[in-house]
Amino acid sequence: MSAAARETDVLSREVDAVVEKIAAARAEVGAIIMGQGRVVDLSLTVLLAGGHGLLIGVPGLAKTKLVETLGVVVGLDARRVQFTPDLMPSDILGSEVMEEGLDGKRGFRFIRGPIFAQLLMADEINRASPRTQSALLQAMQEHHVTVAGVRHDLPRPFHVLATQNPLEQEGAYPLPEAQLDRFLLQIDVGYPDREAERRILIATTGDREKPARPIMTSEDLLQAQRIVRRAPIGERIVESILDLVRAARPGEGDPEISRAIGWGPGPRAAQALSLAARARALVDGRLSPSLDDVAALAEPALKHRMALTFAARADGETIPGVIERLAAKTLR
Image (cartoon, rainbow, N blue to C red; front, top):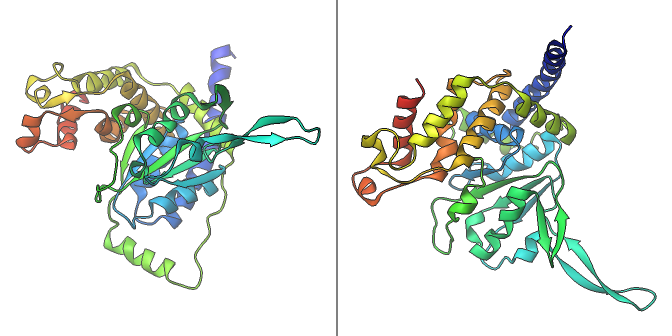
C-alpha cells in the first residue's frame, strides 16, 4: 500500500470515529435546544472550524442556554461574562495584584480573568464600551493576551460565542468592523415554529428539566478541527468561494449588484467560508464540502463583513438579498 493510500485509510478511520461523536453531540444539543436545528448546526460548525460565532436574536430564544449546553456536550470549560457599560478590560483579561511573601518581599501576581476558558460566552457584547470590546480582539485572533507587557497564552481550544440583542440599541455600542471580521459566522436566531414551541413549553415548565450530557471531550474537538483542516476540498469549490467573495466587493462582479455594495469582505471571509464549508460537511457526516455547503454558509459568513451604499438602502436593498443574488450568479 502506498503512503498516500495509507494516509487516506487512516484519515477515513479517524473521520468515521469523529463523525459518530459529532452526530451524538448534535442530537444531544438538539434535544435540549428545540426548534433551532439550523442554529445548532451553525454553532457546531463554528466550533469544528476553530472559530468564533456571533449569535444575534431577540431575548428569550435560548442563546445563553445554547452556549451553556454546547460547553457541557462538547466537553469544554465554559464561562460567561455579562457585558455592561461599566465592564472594564481587566474584568475580562485579568489583572496584576501586589502581594507580599513570607520573606517580606513584594511582587506582582497575575490573576487570570474569565477569558482563560475554552469557551467564553460574551453575553450582549454590544453593551460594553469599545475599549472593553477591543480587549477581545487580540485574544480572538492570536489566542493570547498581553497584560503589563507580558504574554499569557489562552487554553486550547479557545472559542468565543457572543450574543447580541438587535432590538434595544439605547446605551449600546455597535461592534467595530475589525472585531466583526474576527467572527467566523454571524448566526441569526429566529423564533421556533409552533410545534417546537409547544415542546419547549412542556419540557421547561415541569418540576425538572433534562440536563445536558457530555458527549465529547476537548481532545475530541481538537481532533475534529485537525480533520477539518486536512479534509480535501475540490478545486471547483475553491474557485467558487473566491468568485463569491470577490463578487461581494465594490467594483467587482456583476455591475448591477456591485453598485449596491459600499464595502465588501476581505480575504478572511474566503478563509472562513473554506473552513466552515468543510466543518459543515463533517456535521452532516461527509468529509468533502460541496457547493451546497458554500451556498448555505454564504450569508452567515459574509453578512457581517460587508455594507450597502446609502442609495442602495434607500432603494430597499438588504445585505441578505444582495448575498442571495451573488450566490445565485457565482455558485452554479
